[in-house]
Image (cartoon, rainbow, N blue to C red; front, side):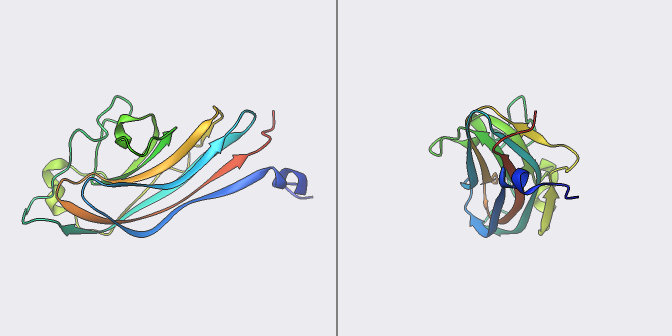
Length: 168
């Protein structure tokens, strides 16, 4: 007997949240994926991997600075050199960290040790927690370079499931 029937499988849309190796200039951000959730649907998100593959010096600075104001809100007080944020109803023309951030995967850096970070560094969102979202809106994964003086090369690998008819 199948664990998931053909009927149930037809109600599940598996969504890639992926970005191949991409160069992000200082302070830049880029949408990785977006999905619209309407009434009666659920978005389930469990896995995401962020890799900081390389850091280039964009000026003559020796120290790798991090913009302390980025990601400094009550929900996510820690910054980092690079991050992927899950944002509801993202407005691309506005800074991502000032919007409704629902989840975060970041390359953590002790700000006093930032100059000693040696890429590649990979961080993974814990797979033990499933984030289930059913409020209508557009949910976007946005990757950003939080450095003040380094160009970053990042890649993102993750997945989500859009359930068109969630079981009660």
